[in-house]
Image 1 (cartoon, rainbow, N blue to C red):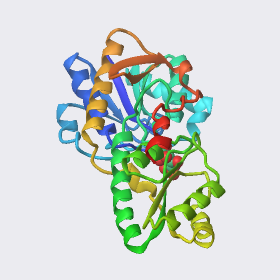
Image 2: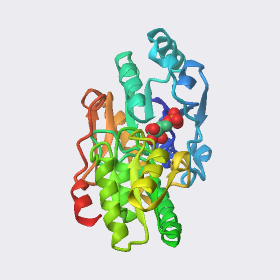
Image 3: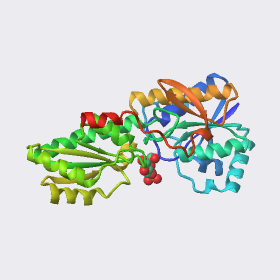
Image 4: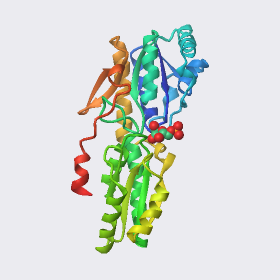
Length: 316
Ligand code: F6P
């Protein structure tokens, strides 16, 4: 079989490990694997390269995605998707493995309906995809954030400051939750676990009165303006406060072992699903095992609140 592979949406460490596994496992089973450049744009522009064992050599440890990625608004148009599928069919590519987040899955679901045998792999640092315990890239991003929190704590303690750390996640609090727990944050604020400003400020006043030398607040992006919040804390709590927006640094870096393994397992599993003529599904990891679910069970669904939220009150 000729199988295409692409990465789409925000890049995530471990995407290269997944592509590598698709190529290596695919070749082992006798398939030809084609890399599609820059997400769905590569399907539209017919920007496709044949990949082999050598093309993915050394990729396991590389961050980003060597195929490139994009968020293609054009792909939302049906006539554009028809052209993209035609390009693939002209090359004899009958199956596609699409690595990305929710937007990628929406595209992949449409392509399945248009006759391309499509499988989705969850590649995003946000960990916001239902049907999987973890997404490729999440663990590495948590490591990056924890490293930043540890450093911010050093300087916060020296200066007796409160540090607000804004992390990514779009509308999912898992990056803040996991990194906040690992970094020993005093407060973790997420869409699933909101806290009002007054609560935080009054707690900070207490901490200050007890003589604590620092406080760390980890907060998911898109909740409030962290620089304004830092000023408010400084004015009202007696704790001088500074905000740090970690930004795109969270998406880069060499994937950690968990993401290398997850990418490798998921890439291999996707090829094996196609061997069994299973498609129109996305891959997940549940209780350490590979699973797959129809796109319709996952696309547009909300991920249940992570059960480790119960830890926040007990250890913060
Ligand atoms: O989905 C991954 C992510 O990094 C989110 O955490 C963030 O909100 C978004 O992508 C940023 O997107 P862009 O790269 O388009 O600015």
